[in-house]
Amino acid sequence: MPNGAEVLVATLAAHNVEYVFGVCGDTSVDLYRAFSEQEELTHVLARDERSAAYMADAYARLSDKPGICEGPSGGGATYQLAGVSEANESSVPVVSMNTSIPIRYRDRGVLTELDQKALYDTVTKWNTSVDHAEQVPRLLRQAFRETTTGRPGATHLSFPMNVLNDETDAEVYADENAAEYPPYRPTPEQDRLKAAASLLAESERPVVVAGGGIHASRAWHEVRAFAEQVGLPVGQTLTSAGCIGDSPYSIGVVGENGSRRYANEIVREADTLLLLGTAVESVWTNKWSQPSDGAATVIHADIEPASIGKNYDTEVALPGDLRKTVEALGDLVGDIGPMWDPADLQARHDQWIREFEDAFDADDVPLRPERVVADAASVLEEDAVLVSDPGTPTPYFASLYPFSEPGRHWVVNRAHGELGYAIPGAVGAACACPDQQVVALSGDGSFGIAGTELETYSRLDLPITVVVFNNNAFSWIEAGQQNYSGFSFGVEFSSLDHAAIAEEYGVAGFRVESAEEFEDAFQAAIEVDGPSLVDVPTQPLPSIDNVPVDWLEPEA
Image (tube, rainbow, N blue to C red):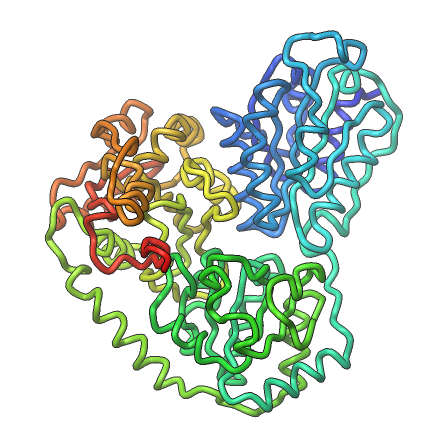
């Protein structure tokens, strides 16, 4: 008769899980024995539990499956927490698991004991402790249902050691509807859709803002087709940058971070805003000033009804799946466009991009980030995947990189903005997108947190290229300090040769000494048969003019 650990792994396999990202520990011996005795799924050993959670997060964002991560008790559970919280707040379906001390030792002060359920209650969509072996498959199925249905999010299960060791005859099967996401596609009521279509038809300057929900619904092509049918400019949030590719109606990112000035102007000109899959948070709205509440009529479509009307008075609520909603709206509005002149949108774009042309070719050393973006774009294929840390790389690539294909080619952790996401996240990306180029965009501050995962790259021979923006500082924070209060403290650190460090891990390292060298070095790194890293000296944010980040300006 199988034990709980074997049933756990069999249930994962029944849900067509391909990868489990995790770290071993004393409480996980039975679980790892079960992993070792099967061939249906691949266990990816990370170098710490936070990295494992980031790997699962990025894998889920780029595939149509939940990401799976695991770790041991005690510190394993606390380390893993950061990544699980990021996934949950970013509406990413992740099933996280931790093994734990035997039930009979609870409340006796045994090593690594903590209340995992209480720890994870505030950072997950659903969370439980599995206290009997016969509960393993049922509660794991529940975790898959909870993580994929409605607004996706993170779930967590705690497995005491004795439960994994106990034998059970519990039936193993999958909830096939929850093995991928979204499992269900509810459509808003017809009267709501008709009201939204009428508002759009009556509007003079309607504008779309598409958020991260476009990814959860896999609605990239449908939103692009709708925008081109009606002639609507589509602004994107930081997490949805590039989602409709090079459509003439894509105006790029709006808001505080990584935005385009003309895109913000277009949002302020709107008399009607069609919000698609966005929580209407502080970043893309410039702290709810763009637009101010009441400045435009709002139509809000979202899978999570509680998000609708949360921060803006909303005229029409469209709770439902984004793809189904947009398809239905397209059928109702018919051929009423174009509402905006695409030539006007292109002219605004051209005028804005000219501000950066000199920086794209600048020979400055340290390099301007704009030069890095331009040269990277000239090397990478159209379907390349960029995984970014939330610091220096993010505003430049989100704003300036020329995404051409609809879909998700840009991944950044913006719910909590933890440093150290890109390098481990790229592991999940490579597993989800084995036939695409994967690039991790890391600040040097982030490298100091997650650089040990280069050993994972080398051990698994992953074809990932890391670009390290090397400016010897937590440059984002330094810019904020100087901008707000005119000081700089606790943000600078020693310069490192990251290429030499990469070589020690068995990763091909390239160190750039001049602006002219970067494109060739990046091309060579991309062509490496295995992992590679390019160390690029870049200017710190406080020294750069025209930074595409509004929050660096002090509030009035």
